[in-house]
Length: 421
Figure 1: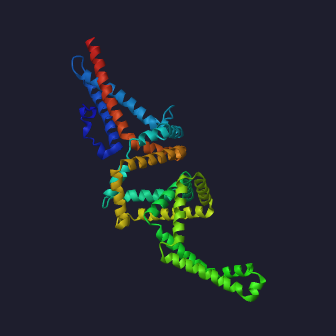
Figure 2: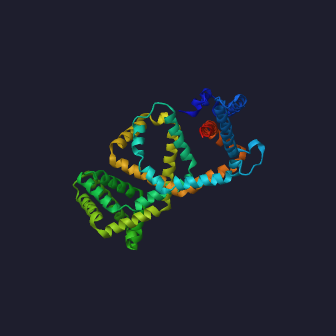
Figure 3: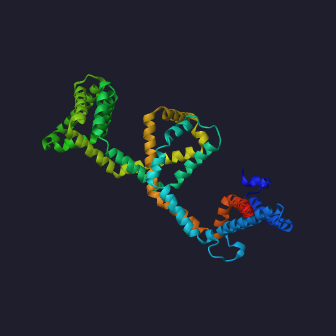
């Protein structure tokens, strides 16, 4: 049976009075025990039961006062007296903050612990359920959007952008692009999907020839001899060259079976084959890829791509109603359905999330626990005392009540043994 109910003090409702109500209950019980002791002491006779009540009340006062002293000594000096080893929490708040930070670091914010906990969490499935059936309104949807926007804004854009660019570049460096290009080109040729590209090249060549006609005439004039220039043959030669090239390009554009086009397609097939099987060609493509990645213009392009993506995510997070509407919302719902039905994709996303969170804990765990320690150190003694007392005050007052009742029962048992002896 609950000791509070056994004493009849369950009429004090902790939900109504909180810690203050429980303090009144504990103090009231102590006053009741004092009154009971005085009454029993007055009415006690060798042959009546008041001696038992006196023993109960006397021991209950001792137990209640002892627990009152212990509870009070945690937060302040009892009766304002500077008794040694009292006001424990205010005097040791800095050490408490350091120990709390150490506890968090050693038991929660270590990569092994976080990895073990994350292994039991299916983030991909949870995200899939949320995206597939997003709540129409409510705190969860608004809170998730606000949290996502706050996280994006809180992270250092430059550092995060550098991480994204580095990750993308590392992914490209580790990818063998030559076989992929060769396979794509071979498939395009087999399905005649290369024809628009060839036609586009022919059109581009014809326009380039028109744009550089003066340059070609100048080259012919420089290479021609003085006699040819004096007789005007250089001009006729330049006209013949330009006319012949335009005619060739026009015939190639009009005739899909033109021999030059056939030669070009044969060359494309050869390139596709070499990209897949020729180590020398693959090495050349890899060198071109490295030069492409190291180009500052490409780095700026990836930076702009990330900034555009970040701005789009922020707009979507700030306006969840617009985000979940239209084609974009339908795409998100489709993504949610896919996340729930594709175990392989779930494993990939969960593995990525686990690695990202474990990496963040490994990189920023010390800063997090230092924040806890510095925050506690910054509190004044009254603040930390008030916050801790409001958090556990009710339970501490239960200790006083239970101590009073248990003390009384122990005193009663001792008195009973003494009388029987």
